[in-house]
Length: 283
Image (cartoon, rainbow, N blue to C red):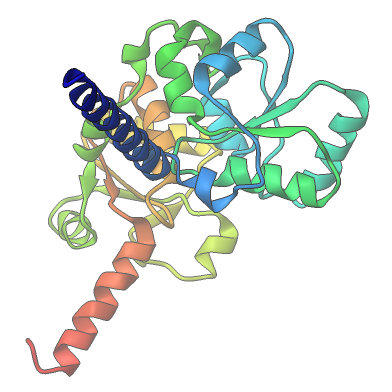
């Protein structure tokens, strides 16, 4: 009879421990997958379940990133309907009318909200049964490299993926980027979209404007840099597009290149902060 209170206490402690563990797991999940909390009305699918349905051909897969990102690294068999396109809703509507299977949309990774925004936009446009795969292309490619395409060819080996550490090795702060250009006969490329430039040149007289998807022009400057033993200094608007460009540069065998960390957004932010510091008298 005396053992029963002890058993009851152990049971209560076990239940409390399980509840705490569940709460911690839920908190970590929210932190890892912020879209699930930001878009509670959007259905999501996790990696392994998604892969099984993909192999059984039970779902139709749509990559909602830019065409450039899609052509760099994608899930084999995925369609490309960019969320940023003016035709996104009409194209998704056409797909829905011709395909009754669940449509799974994906983007870059866990903190990329494009998959959730795409699914939400579809639901608001009465395009039903659209699900977000929110682990993104990078986790998929790492787990199933034989079902991913890198620059149009089967990835096969996840070691071909460029790690964050290797990407960071080719980053320069805006200040260091400018200093490197001032001290060396480097070639600087502005790969921003035309609407991002708004007629503003960062390095007048030194830079060359090359759309990131214009491979013939890119090849010209890559060849020039390699032939003349020069470094390519490249910048975009926010430091995100260049992450995908790195695959192309590595594939071409270019070794000496750097990107501006944070792109022009970081450059102007630094300039504003410096101007404010001077205005406050903190030279």
